[in-house]
Length: 288
Image (cartoon, rainbow, N blue to C red; front, side):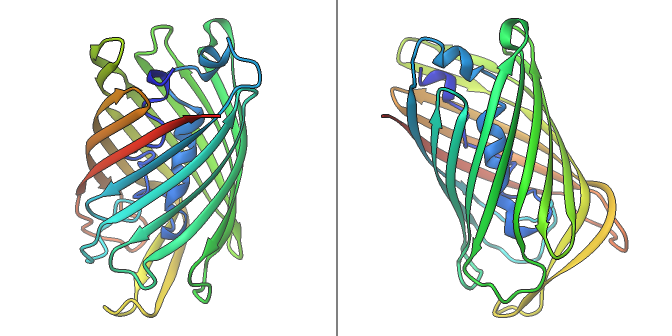
């Protein structure tokens, strides 16, 4: 049972991608929930033999560097993203997550609460959809341009052997200015070792981010005052490659990954540099 959940919330990012990629920095954590419901293994298969089965999934992810939409903001800092998720066998789930930045003031940036529903369907359960609603609680609320939450929906397809898959997701961000994002993720699932208690695999992923470009601009090095400038042009934001290796044993999952960003210029942006970072994740499954 634990094997099927090995990749939940250990992003690389998705999602991560993941905390690196959503347009505004204030909503970077949201891509985690996409990976929860659009995994390479069908959760319906896992839960088919249970009636009203439910569990808690505890995870924390460390990123060695912080980039927003793949862009370097000239601040060397790491970030940590803890998350607690409840899931029911009927497809309903709820999640609370947050993100900590080592150099921002305050360091704890935003707490995200999410509720959602997802289901697999079709012959062999190779198709899957989900929808979710998220709300944000900020540590610093006097910054212009903050979003209140988002509405997301996604659709995924995978081959019968669960070795290849694609996810297409969209998000509409709620706030004073409309913002939206469309993300395509294509992944492979390559098993290196599989025994009764130990599983090792690599899961390379290509993510393409399009939508309304949001660029975070910090006014001074103290990070006491900051503002967000928004370019409402729609276009290609960033392309990301994730190269994670994942190990699962008993109720624990571990991940070590390397991630590459290839940001695309939008509006007045010029000479954007490619960026990269390492991620480390650990998670634990608790049966209820």
